[in-house]
Image 1 (cartoon, rainbow, N blue to C red):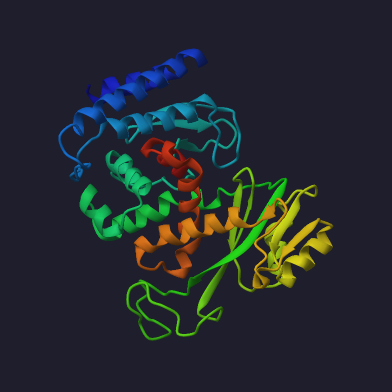
Image 2 (image 1 turned 180 degrees about the vertical axis):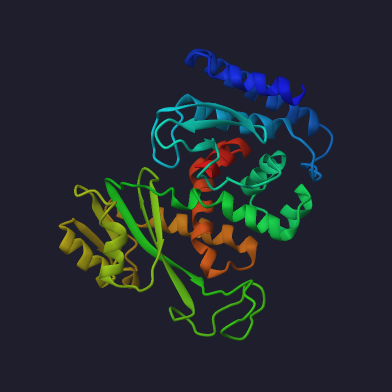
Length: 337
């Protein structure tokens, strides 16, 4: 199918009824599965996608983004829904806002705006699903290492903000720690370490970056990098999301006790140093298991620069939340925001 015919297909999407769109989605997914099956029948692993190569999966993903946007187009500049079609450019449908007269497309104002080589986006999204290193990403999809780095952080810009807005029932909270890192910086404020590295001091110190993790029994999860381990810092993270009817479970740290007191929350403080791991039905094994999975997943990167740590926390959240259902199409949709 040539580009003109494909644009005609995209234009026809706006005339489809919801039931027809649903049927089309199923058909597209089945076709994508058939294509992937044919491409991977012989090789044991996905083949690298050369620069400039097109992909049916990519076309379908971009078409899906455009179809989703076309269902309820909104001006990214003034949020007006009074818009109309305004031709196309760079193989993307354009719109014009009747209120502010600005033109835009489905990618305008999103992290994917102005990124080139859209035919490689689905392949890049698949590398995020698999969680492979940047050098392997660059080799697989045929782009420069700096391009792979820039794409990774563009694709993760929206997911890093996707956190649970409300934690209910039994809410477990704990901290995990990551070694402070200036990986990739041209000028280090300290002597360089080997990849990954270890702290010079045992236990908690200025070399460690604390990350607060809070999670309820429904797997709703939020996290935040803390500048300090204090009641004020913990309150800033937990107060907006923990329901007033929730029960907070943590270790015996005073910061949690103080927050629970001021917030008026029932609080179960486990004395871990005395070997108290559970108290009746209450424990923090749920959040501890999440922290363990997070630390194990992060090891593949041999250390992450602290200034990019929030992006990797968001990356892991979407992987952990979606599980085996996460694929390139869903990852690309999350990157679009």
